[in-house]
Image (spheres, one colour):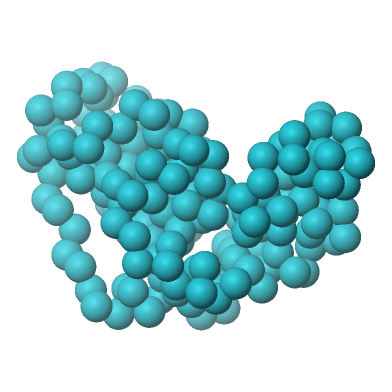
Length: 199
């Protein structure tokens, strides 16, 4: 397991995105752990409440991952992701709140040329160590899930099996597999939020 995690965390964003497009769930986890802190920091420029920042960050990742097929490699993934996070933060703010904070009151233009104006993030060598630790936390948290969820999570997120393969391996309906995987991911994301607070 640790070798797999190490290999994945060594991959570039573009390589991880290619894997994600092939339904490699572990690639999504590495992208999430790589940018979770940065996305929250970016959102904190616009939103003050810690609980709101966490909710908006989670929603931002959900939006980004559901639209990952639209990502264009000529832009940095972080820039694309932070743009989604900013728009999601703005969606959460009322017009009155935006006016008080002296922010735009109309919807943000989606012109891709604006992406080039956002500053690139600074790379910190310590991030590589943190990324591996974060991935290891995911693996640890998978083991904490209840049996039904742990089994599908292992097969999907670690062994990279598809819904049909898991259904056949466990001899359960494919819809049950989908439901359990969705719930397992939700529980894992929540567990990661709680464990982040302990760091």
